[in-house]
Figure: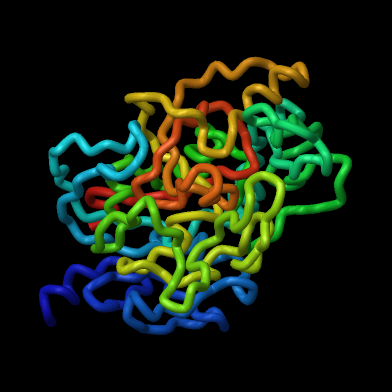
Length: 343
């Protein structure tokens, strides 16, 4: 048995893929498939939202990221992205292959009876396209404090829209994400772990380039067109996309840029730029919602709202502050396993 193969032992279902350990690797039909990380089968609309073995296998739906070093940030990015010049050592760990889905979060809620902060508060911040002829918008006016909005009803009680099982769970807070992670014996990633895994063994993207392939097709779910008025949906999605609709990175992770910003467990520090998609706290305050009191945490990777015409934050080095107790329609998360549990 090779050394690489031995490092993959310990999970019930594990495949060695180009030096990467992949637990519960799913193809379109839900069966185990082996492929290189660059050609992993996409999940997307044919995916149920539940990894094979979820609930019975400790690492279901996760990939093993090897130990290494990462130099956070980009000299080409915003002030809060500027690198410190130090390379950080990252131990090997396991991380969710996709953003946590509504199907996964629903299984957690069914098993525990957990009620999210947005459900308890009765409202949350939801993106809405501004009305035609609105004139000049102030920063963040495209956010609405929507009554009844929560992870089950992402558009609020006035809408019939319900959460799709294979889309990333949103309208959750740090406490909600941690409750889910602890249920599985996991944690949220640090910023260093997240950025290291998201780069997939490669280097940071350049800020002046959109995520497009050689043919010019979008390689992530982000905003094409003039934000916030016109989204041409070249990528096929006006808002959230099911997880795994675009190619995986070199470590086998899907949607590390675009789709939803992802929570980390690290506090935000450094220069504060305006929020990449506007500040939802303005809408909360004007609608009479309670002020946010949670500390600011780092979120990573951008969302479906990131546009070349506005913020350019569809990159692995992108980082923003997010109030720990704020539920918004463009922030989700994925979990990690470290140490003995992740060896």
